[in-house]
Length: 266
Image (tube, rainbow, N blue to C red):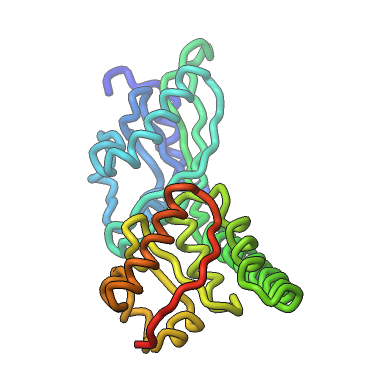
């Protein structure tokens, strides 16, 4: 860099003494220097020679470099310190690493213009992983409690009414407002704690899931005997025709329909 601002020369002298990873860039995001700790922090493959004189686009994928450059431009334009969490994929391990990146403007002697940026990146991968595990644990606790509450409700409904209709209404309430994929996931999650026959299928009458009560009641061995099949694949034609007729009527009207149906044990 011609006519290098004095601040960069000072950084070259004092950077090795600073007990934290730091680097400095020009206003276009080109790396001009850094201490050994910064190169250790960003990866063993990132030697000083590979980084100096280059922008993030030359050693990071675009989706990683874009937010970095956005922050660099923001620091230059707003002339203030900006801190943000950033992540990279470690080339050697393939694992994601998280950093708390802090960037601040470097001014000329009269403090009228930004001549560069000083940055530090502190790795917070362990903290992020601990937070992720904590959230997963809390979600699992909530999920288990919801399942237990659901089981109590449906067991009481079955005891009070001796009818699967009340249980079906509870399931419908739980699934209302969910996306298609979430509906099927919810049914799968609650199926085996539902104390009555339960199965579900798509708009073409192809079975997408069932609980053990339903599988055993018609003589099946496992859910794989039914997945992707319609009633025509496992019932005599007349029985299948009757079941499909009722299924289609429910889909056409959007109403609950209760009918007696004769089925054959497989």
